[in-house]
Image (tube, rainbow, N blue to C red):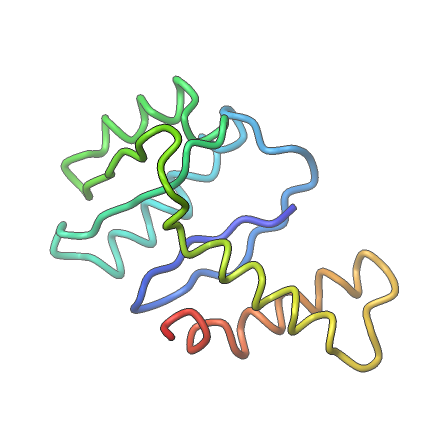
Length: 130
């Protein structure tokens, strides 16, 4: 599993998660990745963070952390059962398509990880802006 944070202005490198994402594991990602990204890309404090209602994102510990850092950036709450407007689905599809079209295709988990990172760095920023 991989995780990423992105905005119109910039993308962080993908993070490889060795195990299933839980609320506690998500909490370990937020300070180093989301918070630092928001403080750099949206240094004026006007940035907004959004995510769907996946269990780790809506966990008590993650929600508490986001509330505690609400002065650094805003976090908008995703309504339950709302239409999918998260761009991550489009980014995932573009990334998977790019990896599937590589020649030679990735054959090992390490090859796949390398291909994912390379494709993310090379083409995704322009792809998801469209």
